[in-house]
Image (cartoon, rainbow, N blue to C red; front, top):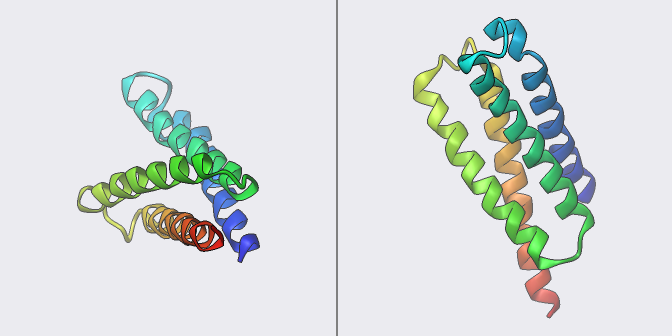
Length: 117
């Protein structure tokens, strides 16, 4: 289970890296629209990194921080659903699934830590 948890975090990180790297391709440069596109990729990169820290840290602070960030990111990507065609933008569905998995792992880990006490 821990391997799948880490895999989800790495995939979020990779998705963010690809998204950020494609900002100049899809937006033509780093103008206002390009910077907003880049910021979506950076958000995913930071989320992936935070989830990687959570998977390697026994502390409650990392788990709580990742849980909060995952919930906010999940709300954000769900907010994209009415704005884009999911058929033309499968990365939105993929993002929802990965972030939902990371959120679930954050919740499961919190319950596991509570049971140990």
